[in-house]
Image 1: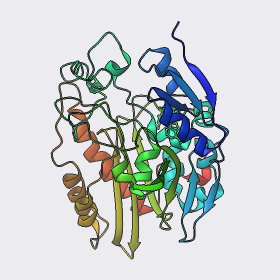
Image 2 (image 1 turned 180 degrees about the vertical axis):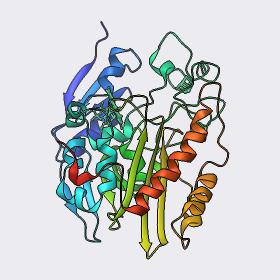
Image 3 (image 1 turned 30 degrees about the vertical axis):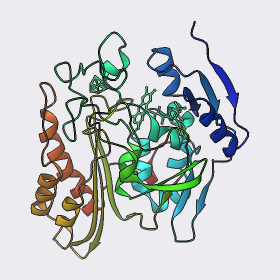
Length: 338
Ligand SMILES: Cc1cc2nc3c(=O)[nH]c(=O)nc-3n(C[C@H](O)[C@H](O)[C@H](O)COP(=O)(O)OP(=O)(O)OC[C@H]3O[C@@H](n4cnc5c(N)ncnc54)[C@H](O)[C@@H]3O)c2cc1C
Ligand code: SF4
């Protein structure tokens, strides 16, 4: 039996006080990842700080035409929120490509950002893993690495971030609002998750005494031309081998603005502003898509079992951009089944 304390935070300030007081404490929201990790003995928090009663479950319009999404808004509520379906269907589609209905009902917005990798060895405490036990080694580099990363890897870790929602948030250039003892600060989405480097145990730039309060979406939602394509081993209830979020603003048949992010291939949602710049001003055609794919996959490196991801990603980028340009997204958010 591994004992731990449980406390329910009364408000955000109380949650920050609690997490600051006990370095081995963890917040618990939906519990869909943390409880599994505790059962597998991967995480051993001394204290669980229940944040489910904090007032962080609203979706509100911001003064600059965007939206502020509370960290406790459940993934299902967010995907089906009328403002998200109408103005940010890319986000809705990405959320609905993840997990299962039951899990999405429980999973929170903040928890989705903080979920940990699905690398097999991270979950298997009998094997070395630098992310779980720093300095112990990486079993995946010479092991079964079919689901692992092809971009931004290091000698210490080749894990991927498993979220679908985060890939859309990266493409939409969301901001993460976090609260700590010194008040609230905003982190650009592209700076929130980290590459593994030689500290793969640290997934994000959230400080140990901070809580995610909200996600802010800018005004531009790319609602007319978008697509989220997720390639996986099963059609549901499986994490992405490769996923692509594409969002375009078209002027006639030319691309005025573009966003492109990949999931399932790196320790964080993978973007490269150069790939998006290469699309701007170009006709929406196969030459432009091929160029963007080439730039986005620059430096990709496969391991024994996942080299196929490089070609898969190239073709998925091409297809997702074509779907976005044609206005035929992979998931039509208005036709989704609840
Ligand atoms: C079988 C299965 C299949 C899944 N498939 C997919 C999939 O295909 N795509 C996908 O994207 N996801 C998938 N998921 C993951 C799921 O989306 C996450 O488990 C979920 O989003 C986590 O949210 P939660 O509220 O349950 O987090 P919890 O489990 O409560 O917490 C997870 C982590 O986040 C931290 N945390 C939570 N809230 C905050 C906050 N506000 N501030 C700071 N830290 C916080 C906790 O301390 C903990 O470390 C799957 C999960 C399961 C179990
Ligand atoms: S890839 Fe990362 S998470 Fe997987 S075994 Fe190696 S160090 Fe651990």
